[in-house]
Image (cartoon, rainbow, N blue to C red; front, side, top):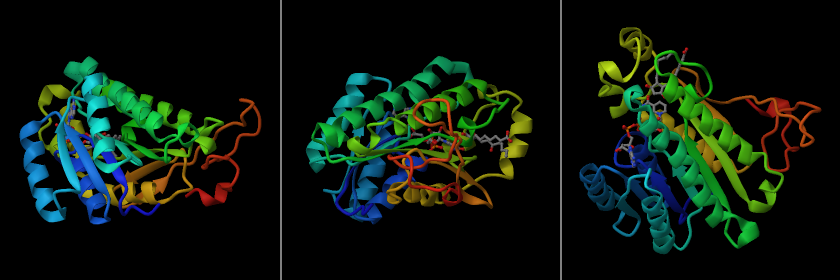
Length: 278
Ligand SMILES: NC(=O)C1=CN([C@@H]2O[C@H](COP(=O)(O)OP(=O)(O)OC[C@H]3O[C@@H](n4cnc5c(N)ncnc54)[C@H](O)[C@@H]3O)[C@@H](O)[C@H]2O)C=CC1
Ligand SMILES: CCCCCC(=O)/C=C/[C@H]1[C@H](O)CC(=O)[C@@H]1CCCCCCC(=O)O
């Protein structure tokens, strides 16, 4: 997928992974509306990025993704500003087991809502231009993590949701790809400002996390791979330190739901051989 001139909507873009993705997309000529609940950091980021990349190409909108009206209004603003949104990144997230209901609202409900808004707008069978929806998940969406069970659940749910849409028999007609970005620990505020009570067994966690930490730029490379590879519907891209980004093999079943497990990766669910999935 060529990125120049594409309209992008991204949540949680004031800092961290979202900001790094926004910057990389702008560098490739895309136009980005990023939203965030934090207006101070969001506006400061907007000012810096507008200076670097042009005032018409990037815009910030304050938005709490758990507020359905605000989320829809922010998305619509991107459509108005750029003519269409062809790339949607549901990225905003928190990690705090003490407020797990709010965490599920941000990490899961809002990513599902953001995906639905994007699908309604993008789908070619209803007059849209098609596009790609990338949900920022985590390795915690793929394996159990005893330090943060609710965070882990919030991310597993998004993998289930995203890959389920990818398997829709209408996926080809809709022209919308669905991808999961799954990094291990990343050096952002989420990791560095983590407080003792926000997860369980913090000492053990710090020990493990220290050896695995990625820089946001490494996650950006993986994100770009997801967006630019137009034949990867349903992709789950894992990002580990030292191993780079690798597509996760998936054993899905035929559309009859029971027979012939196979590795699939594109809308027609036929073109990739198992050996193509690394
Ligand atoms: N940092 C890490 O180790 C990893 C992070 N992730 C995921 O990456 C995504 C981004 O996280 P980071 O950049 O690391 O965190 P971060 O804390 O640096 O950035 C998250 C951004 O989301 C915003 N946000 C939080 N609640 C919001 C809300 N209700 N509405 C709108 N914006 C809101 C924050 O203000 C912040 O700017 C999250 O979904 C996180 O779960 C995944 C794997 C590892
Ligand atoms: C390889 C072990 C790393 C475990 C510690 C870690 O880096 C955790 C990072 C989390 C970050 O705080 C937010 C996330 O989404 C990351 C989840 C990563 C889970 C890896 C669990 C791996 C394991 O149990 O072996």
